[in-house]
Amino acid sequence: AEVVEHTFIVGNLTVRRLCKNKLITAVNGEYPGPTINAHEGDTVVVYVLNQSPYNISIHWHGIFQRLTQWADGPNYITQCPIQPQNSYTYKFNIIGQEGTLWWHAHVSVLRATVYGALIIRPRAGAAGYPFPTPYKEATILLGEWWDADVVNLENAALAAGGAFNNSDAFTINGRPGDLYPCSKKHTYKLEVEQGKTYLLRIINAALNSQLFFKIANHPLTVVAADAAYTTPFQTDVITVAPGQTVDALLHANAAPGRYYMAALAYASTPNLPVDNTTTVAILTYKYSFPSSSPPLLPSLPAFNDTPTAHHFYSNLTALQRPKLQSVPLNISEHMFITFGLSLSPCAADQPLCQGVALSANMNNVSFRFPTAISLLEAHFRGVQGVYTKDFPDRPQLAFDYTNPNVNAVGAPLQSSDKGTKVKKLQYNSTVQIVLQNTAVLTAESHPIHLHGFNFYVLALGFGNYNETEAVKAFNLVNPQERNTIAVPAGGWAVIRFWADNPGIWFMHCHLDVHLPIGLGMAFEVENGPTPSSTLPPPPPDFPRC
Ligand code: C2O
Image (cartoon, rainbow, N blue to C red; front, top):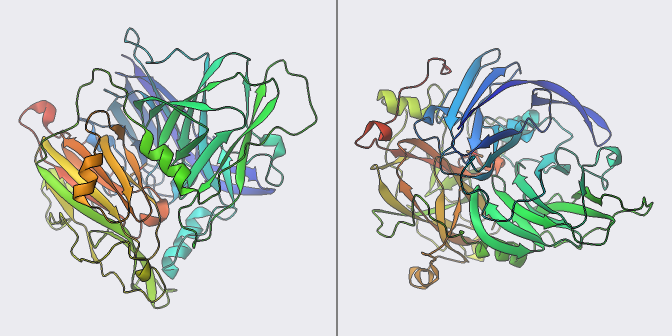
């Protein structure tokens, strides 16, 4: 095992996209940011120096952070932000996970441009990939681009109590690609050799859009998702929600030539405006004759093609291999969490809000971030008054969550408590959560992300959760392991995990627009009996508020 060291200097960068220059926040003058290459078992040390005008924190999305809980990164959950001209060193071990993860800013909307890949290869001397070693690998970071400054956009949206604007383009490795104005020169190109196999590490780093990804004439074989190996799964189309990753093998065995790889929005909600544009990159065969005709575009799913998305999301299974843990069969904590958007009265700090503001909740609690201390520090030091431990196990209001009749303007408002409520878990408890997506305001698929753990996805479905029916569909043998699950629009998912990682762990919607309006909660996992199951003290350079 090795120590992988990086210095991340967060600062301003001017880039040109869609015919305009724009100032963005970026790491080391790179957009997307630097890739971290590590092996399972390694220690990663990243010294972050904040030379940007904003508060910063970096989250290592999907890393378990066992015994390094202070390095998780979500702002005011595990740490106070790194203020301008300050620094913090994130240090963590990578144990028991292989595949593709990523890192991103976890404060305000800065992850729009502050993100990069975190690649974990099998350690030397270990079994290696559970599939034939690919000839080469390529990272495909999918993102969104706004012409406007994202921080201004967010501030305006919050002040008005409304929603965030759609993006102006999607990007592949930071570039919009051929189909957008002024973008041809910078289109990302991947050169392949006939007959070889490539491993694509696909990451959805977009703020607010689930995406379809497809390559003309090249079916893909999915081998991992969220850094957990899957049973090889053949597919033409990959669906990936913000936060998720998919590793897929690409066999370069089409006729030599040039092919587009394309990504476009998967938006389950036909009544919401959508960025209906397509980003492309070019797959080009080495030694093929230069050609003036454009690359072949794949036939693309419609933006609201829910059957295609659901087929992908619900058919992945874990690759069966000896592993440290298996699906918990005896459950000590049963939770039923409804979540979705609602409307609430305008708040005092929303001067431009007219009448009602967009709000979001889990079990009718709209999450409020603390402002002066992180939850983890309050937990560690026993500081009272920062949060309460009464996050409800079940929704407080009963109604038909998927009744389309309450899906219109004038629908009954779903009242929300605003609060910072956590659910306390005993060390090593086994948790099952039914995640029920509500359609009070809009039927929208929300990607729910849990920090600090992978969970098993037992089943996914549409409509109101019906336990008798659902348990028949539970996969208790080889369920997919995820850190982020796209819960179907007006549907449900059942997840299970072992609460064997002490600390404070955020669970939230990975559509960034839903974070400041409350679509989250946190778990407080108690210490276990041994030093290796006890939350250590914060490091000496831990940021102060
Ligand atoms: Cu990738 Cu809490 O986020």
